[in-house]
Length: 154
View (tube, rainbow, N blue to C red):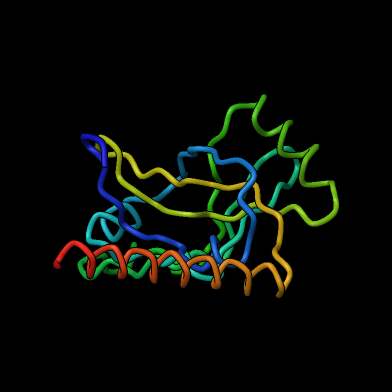
């Protein structure tokens, strides 16, 4: 990892379920209790997705746990959050997501120099046989590494 980056949450299943075409670093519009919960590591990207509405990008289903000392000013855990992208990037995404099978999937959330950032991916869904092929390749690679380690011990 590079200097000043702390990964808070990852969506490991996304790389298994999708072919990643392109990634974007986005900022997020957050409330005070949300950023405090994120800094405490209480965020979950599982089942979250992004959608373009009225020329803006919004993140749905991302869970940020309520802040423990947040009292009545606490946030809604599953609220829709606005993502901050450049206009040029948004127009590119609008064109690409209109194509069949493309979707916007968050890969990881991290803190970069004190700001919460989200790595958003333009992804195309994998078929079941693609997922099996990926698992076969991963197993074969693991076997090669294991054999290499055994060979070095001798």
